Structures are given as C-alpha cells and as structure tokens.
Length: 459
Image (cartoon, rainbow, N blue to C red; front, top):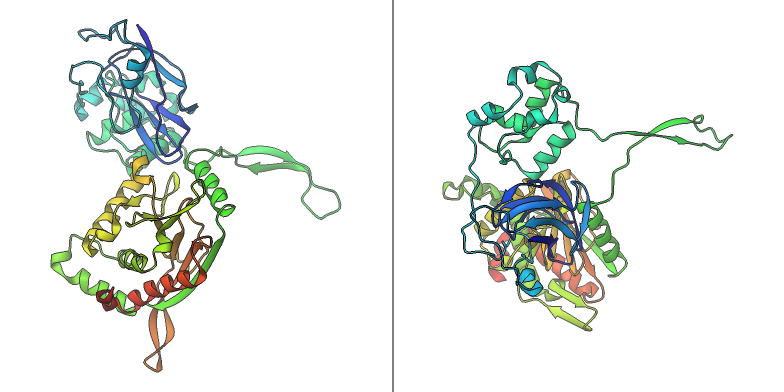
C-alpha cells in the first residue's frame, strides 16, 4: 500500500523547510525512525525520522527545494519491507495521521512492534575498499574528473560530519565519502575538507559571481557602460527568518536604547582569580558568564524587562522565570539559543550552559526546541571589538542587552585618574511595557554588579 508522508509541523510557527539532502532514494528499504533527510528550517538543520517501515516509492521534493508544512514529502510502500508487518488496509486516515511525528527530533509513533534497525557503521578500511574509484587515481586526477557514481559507497551509510561541514564540502565540490576514506571513522571537520581539497586541487568555496550589465547615466563621471560583477544569494533559511523577525520587531515594539559605561576592573580581577582556582578548571568562566548572572539578578528587581506584551489577549505577561537567549553568530547566520531557567543556575552552572550552547551552535546542531521562546536576550558585540550598539528586540521579548568590549581607559577612581578596564552596556527595551525609569534602573543594577561583584550578596 502506497502511503504518503507529509512534512510535519516543525514547531514555533515555522511553515516551511528546505530539503538539504536526501539520505534515502526510491527503492531503498527503511526502518522505523531511520533518518530520511536533513531539512533546514528558518532556525536549525534537523534530521527527519521515518514514521514508517517499508520501501521508498518516490520523493516529492529535490534537494534544495522548499516544502510547505503539510505538503507531500515522500511516499512509502509500507507493504514492501521484507520480514516487516505492514499496516492493515482498513487503517483509517486518522490513525495514519497519528503515526506521523508532529515535531522533528522527538521521534515517530511506531507503526509496528518491531524494533528500529540500526545501520552498521563502516570502518575506514571497508570505506576505502568499497569505493569503486581507486584512491591513487583520485589523488592524481582533478576531483571533478571523477564521475559521481565512483564516489558512492556500496552501503547507505553517510560519512560522519556536521551540517555546516557538509554544506562547506558541497561548496568546495568535495565528496565527503572520499574524505572519510582518508580520515577513518571519526567526525569529518572543515580542516579535513580543506586538506583533501588542497590535495586534489578543488576550488575555493566562494560565491559564484554573476555578470550583469548595468547602464550608467551619461555625464555624471561614472564608469562607462559594461559588465559589473555581482553576487546574488537567495534569501532563505536563517537569513530570511532573521529579516522577518527584525522587521516585525522594529515596526511593532517602540524601541528605546540606553547606554552606560562601567568600570569592570573588579569583575576582571575576579575572573582571573576564578580561572586560577584549580577546582574550577573544568568550567570556562569569562566576562559573559558574569554578565549573564548579573542580568538574571537584575531582572528579579526589574520584572518588566522579563515580561511579554500579549496583543491578542490585551495583557502583559510577567514571567517568573528567566529563559535567557544568547545571540550566536554561526555559518548559517544569527541564531539565539536559550538557557532555560537561567535564574536558577550557579556561576559554574551558567558557565557550563554557555559552553554547551556555543559548542552546539558552532556544530550546527541547535534544535528548534532550543531556539524556542526566550524572555530576555544578551548579544556579545564585544567579541568583535565593538563598544556599543542599538540591538533590536527578539519578537516577544521586552529587553535585550548588548555587551561591549572591555578596554583599558583613563577613569576617575578614588578621586584620582587611573587606567581602568571599562565596558559599555546598551539595553534596548519595549517602551509599551517598560518605562524609561525602570529600563535605567535595570541597567544601573547590572552595572553595579559588574563594578562591585560583591553586591550580588545584596540581591
């Protein structure tokens, strides 16, 4: 029986997803919960599990194509898997709908009692031997001279790598199967791709320039008419979502930004002391950790900056918890993963949460659930050497703090001019529910905690 699997609801109001790559092809036999494809939403790249066991009948979308939620994605012959029981023909549409997962990453409801089959991982030796193309020939010839079929493994197992690395390898024209034969069974990195590309002479991963003809008005001193290089990048994925969110926020919430420069010399000295403590060696405690802790303490005294404006209900929702968003710049664009219940974390707990968040974001494995919600956010522009900015609120939040770079500057200290370590903080808030006085008090509370960390004992 042919059964269609439609793109499930990915959560958080996401209405579409782009197929990054298919991991199965028509005629393949798949097990329950086996990964069918990688799809990219506006927030993350996720793996799509199979809700059925059977044979792939057809694919309804090509790699790179955007599919709407609820649209047919893949068709199965659920009676085609050998040794597996197929759903009964009398199964209703309602039952079939329940068999589909409603959120990527949470698994599928089993359609049979059989345990999902796990694909055996190949060793480096078998990967090399199963490749039809001889490695010596591949090394000696240009990479794109090897036909695609020569690089396909005999099994359905894909090389181990992260979504950003796979995208990078695709831009460089490098087949990860061939790289896996060189590096073995470990996870492939960008440096592995670069090393292989250098050996086979693959081109650099640069956007393709499109020559367009631009007419220039005469008599204005501009260059003569001719070909001018341009690069056109499709607006999709994280960039599309970020643009829509920022426009929505900028034209919905009246933004106000307040700045304050603070002497953080005591905070930087405290960080040096904590880093020198051997018992804390496994925790990465830096300025952002102390800023995050100070923000959580200050939000307890200034709850309006941790609230939400509910236009539909005509209410202001005060959150009695802090889901702290940390803006992270990744290869896919800006994302804001969340530290849940941040106000309950100790300093070391906050450090560990930030470390895990950063590593997951850089690996491209942040799930939609980890990006959902958030009651207040921090953006660390200081890592780029920037002192201050006017951050735009994430939709639904009433406050965001920009953390500037720490710089040594002449500063008044104990009645004298001294060289101190200064940081500028910038807080943007929604003026519909946060008055200027409360926004200023919040910023002053954070500043006081960073100027004198011991004041945390008073909060």
